[in-house]
Image (cartoon, rainbow over all chains, first blue to last red; front, top):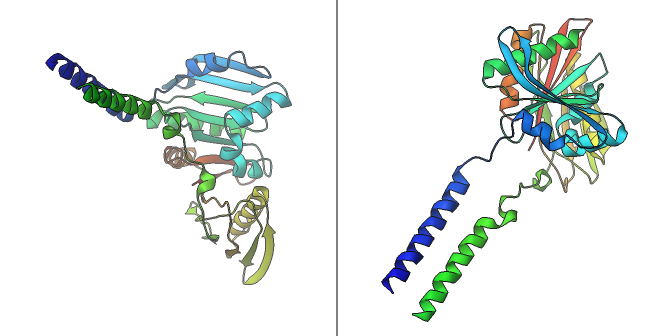
Amino acid sequence: MKRLWIITAGLLAAAIVGITLWHLLPAGTPTPSELYLRYEHQPGVRMGFIEDYRFDDSTFADVVTVEALDSAGWQWMEQEFDLQQHVAQGMAHSGQNGEAITFWQCDDGQNIAFCSWSGRALCFVQPRTESELEHIIIYHLEKLKE
Amino acid sequence: MKHTKTIVMTCLACLLATACDPTKYAVPSTAETKKPGLNVNVHLPGEENEAIQHSFAGQQGSNSIDYIVDGKQYSGEITTEEDITTLYIKILDFAKLGHSVSVTAHGDNPKGTKTDIHTFSSDSQAKVATWSSRMVRKGYSVTIEYDKSTHTYNCTAFKRK
C-alpha cells in the first residue's frame, strides 16, 4: 500500500512540474525555413527562401518571401497573416506620395514581417540583434527611395 | 482505501484536463475592450518629431464625432472601421500641415477598440531605423513612406489594444 502512495505522489509531482514548465517555457519560434515549409504548397502564393541574404556588409539573415499570384492568394495572405490588423492605417497612407512599407513583430516575438502593398508581397526575417534589425530596416528604406 | 485511490485518480485526471484545455490559452479578442469615447490630441510636428498621441476608440455601431481644426468645428458619423481609418488619416494630414486639431467622440462604442498612433519624420535613415525598431519591438506596426519631394521618411506606428 505504501508503494501505491509513493507512485501516486510521484505522478502528482510529475504533473505539477509538467504544468509549471508548460507555463514558464516560451512557445517555440518558427525559423524562416520552418515558415517556408509550413506554407510551401499553399495555392495562390509563391514562396521563396533565401539563405543568408546580404542586407549590407555586416548583416546577413535568412529570408522567407510570400508573394500573391492572384487575388485569391492575396485574400489568403490577408487572413493568414492578419494584414488588415497590421496594415490598415498604413494602407490608407500608401500611395499618397509614393511607395510605403509596413512592418511588425510577429506573435512569436522573433520574426519581423515586412509588407509591400503595391507588390502584394511579404517577407519574414529573424534578426539576431537590435542592430541587425536596424540594418535590415535601413535596407528597406533605401529600396523605398528607388 | 478504495475511495482514496478513486479520489487521487480523479484529481490527477482533473489536473491533466486543465493542462490540456485549449481554451485556456486562447488569445482574448481586442474587440472585447470597451471604451466609452474617443479623444485625440495632436501635437504639431517639428522638423524631427515624435508627435501625435493617440487614444482612439470606436468600431461598429454609430458614433458621432466632433473635430475642431483651427477653431472651426466639424462633425461626422462613424459606422465602420474604414470610417475610423479615413478620419484618422484626415486628422494626421491636418496636423502634418501645421493645423491645430482636436477630436471628441460621442457614443457608447459597443465593440470599441483602442488604437495608439505615433508619428516620426526624418531624412536620416539611421534615426528612422532606430525609432522604427524600437516601436516594432514595443508591439507597434510601423508604416514608412518616402516623400520624394522633401526627401523625408514619414513614419506612422500604430497599435490596437
